[in-house]
Image 1 (cartoon, rainbow, N blue to C red):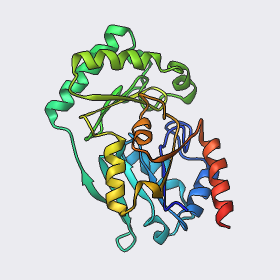
Image 2 (cartoon, one colour):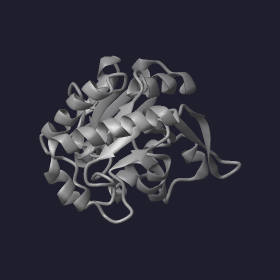
Image 3 (cartoon, rainbow, N blue to C red):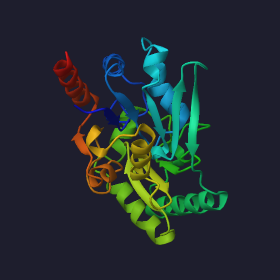
Image 4 (spheres, one colour):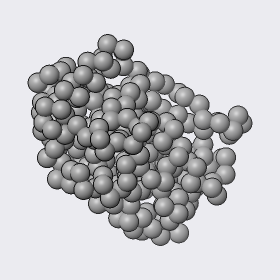
Length: 255
């Protein structure tokens, strides 16, 4: 029996950038009684709260102590303190201002050269490039764009693959990973999900064999692929419905 269930977020626990569905919230709440639950994603902390934590309405404080938020691919880690009734940051490995500036310039230049800079489609006050402290994220249509538009923008990842290729020429000292529906996450080498999962092993004092990971981008170049390369047992899902199906089966074995 595994001790830890780890999850990508967008397209694994939810529809991209939306709150997790009620069924996923119920299944995760049940799983908190039996496993350490560890979502790990390129999202920033506030988005974890909005998409996941705020939806776990039936979870008790003691259950939330078994929920571990590995933010920005695990380069930031938060856990719940039941006594303080609040989330505490355990660690954070931010980029320098100079690194953020160089990554931002590389991504914007690449997207504009290739004709994939869609400023006219971005909502007022939204951002195409976002500084998430320990990573910089390109979201082609911004964070607030509708789900249908996001799905349609780059379904085969070809646009983002082209942007990544050009970014590697402009700023080769950084790593670029495709995630979600319109996103590219840029980090310093090694600060991907391998970094996050390695710290997960250390923080929770478990082995790779204790973890079952769920993700939708497990192909080479996808932001879940580093987890596969680590040798962690992985279930590739297409959507949150696949994840729900698997979790129902896991809980059924326990009961």
